[in-house]
Length: 333
Image 1 (cartoon, one colour):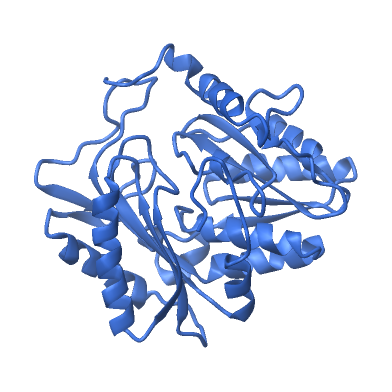
Image 2 (cartoon, helix red, strand yellow; image 1 turned 135 degrees about the vertical axis):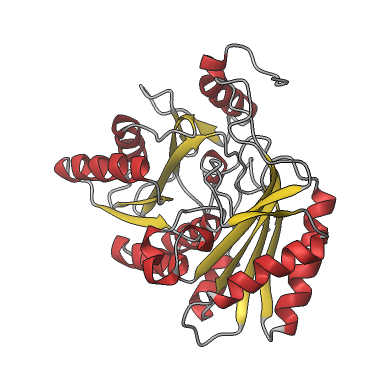
């Protein structure tokens, strides 16, 4: 294992310590809960706030989306493990501004169980909670079972929409419904070229033979739709785009937001080569790219590969996606 770590058991705590020491004006740990961060400006009163969370190992996902116009707080578990109910409840209490809290997280069983229990406990304390669950990975289930799909990098769009909707002063029901609409109109799929190494394990958590790629692999190493020979970038992108377009949601728009996401060990040059082909293919399909993001937004430690996400916009979603947002850990165009 070649990693700049100390004790693997301290990996998450030392990550959070480093983040808050590096950005003390933007982020802080809530009192009594070391496994979480919230916005340092405490600008929560009088508006809907958003809480998120998930396993560590995906930066900038989860922790990186705490910021202006995004989420207000985040709890993280150990690497690839859900945060606890107590962690989420602590974040909820810390960011409650009196108008309710939106929970926004990926569609994984541990996260669903712990977030749902935290929501019940928060409601018992008089805090109104609604949830929006990202399920954008088209490789993980067919359209007729879309509700069971995994949440991957497309949650980026949901953060943008949720934060912008909350900033308008909308009530919790409206913010939740708008965020869910964005999720329902998002499709993602990725490809892995090389595995990641969990610090506490010290070796790769799966294997991809030389000259092969895993099409549709999840961000924890979940199997995709199959192994294929490594081909040119354009050929790989064509396969992803074909699958995404075949799964296009019912929509009256030809305007999309595009995300090309690196999984942790793919250089930015390669991501722009991918974006180039995505742009060509979508334009040829008659779609207009109204918003674009290229970079690392949801990683899996040092996994090599990339994913492509599409959000089919309506007028409101396009306006919200373009609203100001900022975080010290993620590039928000």
